[in-house]
Amino acid sequence: MLKITVWFAGLLVCLLSVSGCEKVAGLFGAKPAVVNTPAPIVFSSELQAPLGRYIYSDVAIVRNAQAPVMVSIAKGELSVDGGAFTSEPQRVESGQSLRIRVQSAEDFNVTTTAVLQVGNVLAEFKVRTQTEEFVIETERNLFDQLPNDKWAVFRSSQAVCV
Image 1 (cartoon, rainbow, N blue to C red):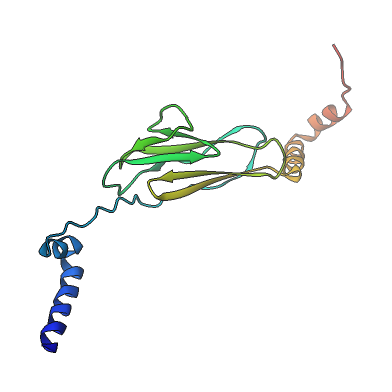
Image 2: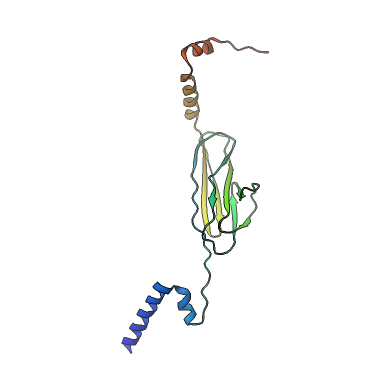
C-alpha cells in the first residue's frame, strides 16, 4: 500500500510539472480558477522636472492578461491607447497601451508618485521637481556658452522699462 501511495504522489508531481494544473484538476472533475495577472509594468522616474508642469511617463503595454482587467490611478491621470487623460477607472485588455500624466509640484525638490493598478498589479511613476541648485547651475551653463563678446554686451546692458 505504501508503494502505491508513493507512486501515485510521484505521478501527481510529474503531471503537475509536465502537463500543468489544468489537466490534473480535470482528472478529479474540478476546473482550475483562471488567474488573470497581467505582467509587471515599470515606469522610469522623472528627475529634475520643471515646477508646476504636466510630466508624462513612457508608454507601457498591458501584457499577459487572459481577460479584460480594470485599471485605475491615484495621484495622476491615465491615457489608454492615446486617448484623453482621465482619473476614472477603465477596462483594458492585453496589447493596449497606457501612459501616465502627473502634475509636478510647485516647489523645488518635491516627489509626486502616481500609483497605477492594472488588475492586481501595481506600478509607480515618480516625478521629482528640480532643485534650486540645478536651476542655478543650468543658468550658469547657459551664460558660459555665450561667446565672450556677447557676454560683455549682455553684462553691461541696463534694464529698460517701457
